[in-house]
Amino acid sequence: MAQSPKTTIAPLDSLRAIIRDKRKGLELTQEQLSFLTGYDRTYINRVERGKRNPSFTAILNICSVLRLTPSATMRAIEAEAGFEFISEQQLAIGLLKRKRVAKFKR
Image (tube, rainbow, N blue to C red; front, side, top):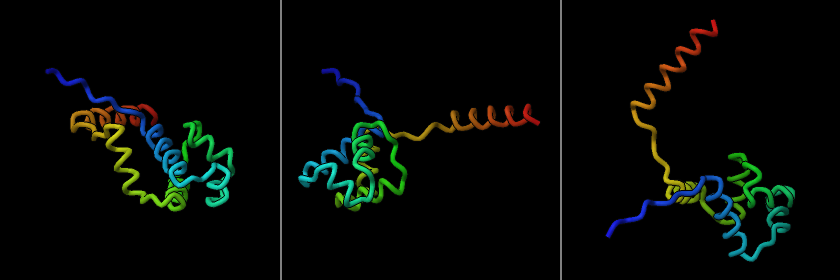
């Protein structure tokens, strides 16, 4: 039997789902989460809908209120998003291209 390819989702989509699901699991409204984190309710709403890209500080604050460890949250995002390092070849090509661009800017 052939295996289907692993589907991945964007890291921001994974983060927003984790936040929304944990908030609902704790039976908190967006209003309550906003009060506890100090962020506006519309900001929390936009984070959960993927319309805002939260800062690292915001992620830490939200994780603290939702009783999520940031490391476990990042591991879950890595697993869902299929995080992989770029290859040595891709790195070398990128560095060469960067060097050429910098050379022309002088």
